[in-house]
Amino acid sequence: MDNQNQTQPPAVRPDQWVEQFGDYLYRYALLRLKDPDQAQDVVQETFLAGIKGLEQFSGHMDIKYWLRGILRHKIVDVFRNSKREIGVDDLTAFEQPNKVMMTIWGIPTRHPESWGFDVHRAMTQKEFWIGLKDCVTNLKGITQKAFVLKELEDMGTEEICKVLDINPNYLWVLIYRARKELKSCLKSKSIEPD
Amino acid sequence: MFFCKQVANALAKTNYEDLSAWRKMLLKTHVNLCAWCGPFHKDVMQHQDMARHLCQHEEDLFTSNETLDDASKESMKILLKNYDNDQA
Image 1: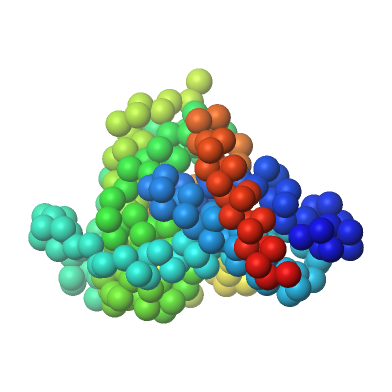
Image 2: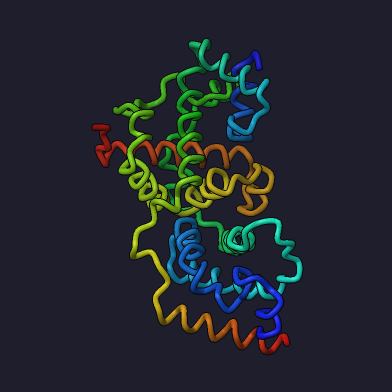
C-alpha cells in the first residue's frame, strides 16, 4: 500500500477508502439489499475487488463511482445467488392482470387507482422522497428484487430475468405489483403538498 | 408508436426518458391523446419519473443512522491493509 500511496493521487489511495466512501457505499447497498449485514459484506467485498482491480482504474471518473460500479455487480450477485423466494401470496393472492386487456392493448386496466394527491406537486417535497425511500424498503421478496434491478439499477429485462430466473411476463407482473404497493404505501403515509 | 401495445412494450423495456427524442415524442403524444391506454401509461410514466429521481437524489435522503459502525470500519481497514500487504 505504501508504494501505491506514493504514486497515486489521494482519492485513489485504498487506505482512505473506508473513511471516504464506506458510508456512501453502505447506504447505497442498504437501500437495495435491506439487510445491514449483507450490505456490510458487499461493501467489504467491493473494497477488496477495488484493490485487486485498481490497475484497471483509468481515472476517467471519480473513484467513488468506480467503486459504486463494482458494488452494483456485487449486489446483483447477491440477488443471483439468493434462492428464488416465492411466498404463498406471490402467485395466488395478488390480483392477476386482465388477460384480454393485456393481450390486445398491453395494459391490465384502463383505470389505474388514483394517487389521491397531486403527484407532481408532491415530487417537489423532500418528505415525499423520504416516504418513497421508506416504501421502496418495505417492498418484499422477489418483488423488491425485481423493482431494484429494473428501476434503481436500470437493468434490461433479459438480464433481470436471468438473474432472478424468471420469465419476462412474470417480471412485468412483479413490477406492476411493486408500483401498486408503492402507491398504496405512499397514500397511507398521507403525503400531502403544503 | 401508433398502437397501445407498442407503447406498453416500450414502457416495459425502458424508462421513457431513455428513448430517443423522436420515440419519446411519439409515445407522449399517444399517451396524451389515447383515452384507452393513456391513464394507465401516464401512471407508469409517473412511477418511472419517481424511480429516476429517487436514484438521482438518494444521497440527499440518507439518514445519519445509516452508517457503518466504527468497529466495522476498523475491521474493514485491517482486512484491506492485510490483503494489500499479502498482494505486495
